[in-house]
Image (cartoon, rainbow, N blue to C red; front, side):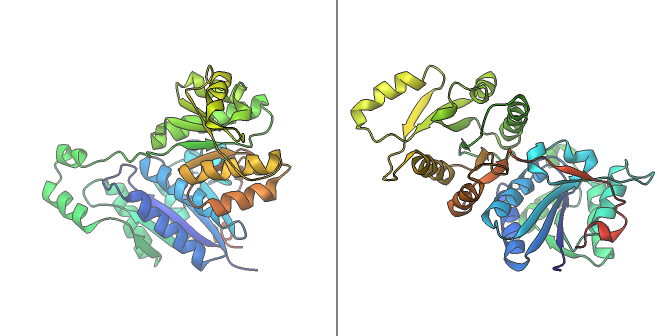
Length: 330
């Protein structure tokens, strides 16, 4: 059986580098090229971990033939949408509730530690980095020498350090399609996921497959004052667009019609979904358990570029003492 390669992200939640997303994606895609069985562990919460989650989700669905899972300690798993985490790590020892002690045990069970720790920002996070090195772990440092030099000039001045923090936000929309029926549980999970995407990534614009306009899903978006664009796939002339707009736009702000040569409603809907994925940074849909799951997975894998939140699944809690390395090794 192939051994699992465990990559754990650690660092301070605040970000000082606008290109942090590209650095995290480079690590995640590099892992997927090297290993076939991977677990990405989120060592905390905050902006850093929101973007490391996005990188892990994108890689997970880009490589559907690889066994890629995402985990987080139980204490922080609730900060992420339930559909984004495959495994919540429980710590049963008396020290389990103490965050850094738990992360130390996670580091000890990891193969690679991805570190975003600048000296002078967080003593506790810097200690975790040193602990990983003392344990002989392979460490991938994603900090910037230029930023480190600027922080050194700040010489511990908290106001100067705070002024260096940046808010990394997406300037692309989130695609929404293939959600399935609007059951109460699914609508609640959808709302939770939308809240996270809006707050963590600054997304305000949502591209919604037109068949969901008028459903409880779109009502959740309206309650959050999101900008909603209905995406249709009719083979109509441009002159017919005003009629389409009048049909959908009382419930949304705009409409885009994706013209496609595909035949049949399912093929047209998939072509529309591919277009949405190509122009979006994030997507929400039901992959797991969908009647066309494999077709959707191929569509997502080929799209290249969106972090997918799969509404068909929720994380499960693994009751195990994480000080035991067999928790992680397959």
